[in-house]
Length: 131
Image 1 (cartoon, helix red, strand yellow):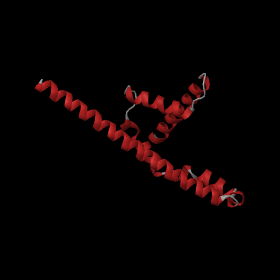
Image 2 (cartoon, helix red, strand yellow):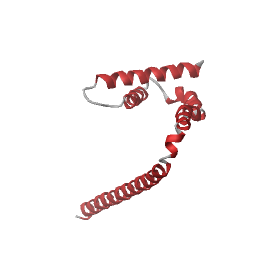
Image 3 (tube, one colour):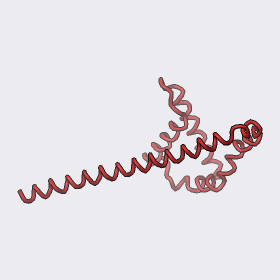
Image 4 (cartoon, helix red, strand yellow):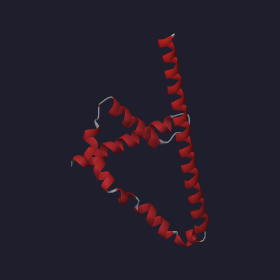
């Protein structure tokens, strides 16, 4: 019963996020609004992570169940997909490689900037202590 009530609360938060997104003067995903609402509830301690741990664990353990509708739809459209599977696979592989390279480049750049900032901070503190 506890998991059902927490799922109902999560659904209510999702509906609230969709409602907020609907009244915004610009396009914004309702799911992101719902996540921000949930974050605000956790941050203000109106809800705690410990309260949702059983539900979160249950959802993680049953995640495959939530992908069934998409997989069934893909199987229903297999004839259409079979005509274009090679380009889709190639595009997917290239996209993964590009995304990986971009993430690695961003991480490397971030580390280099951090080292430069830390190094300049150390030099300025050494100059102040010797000066």
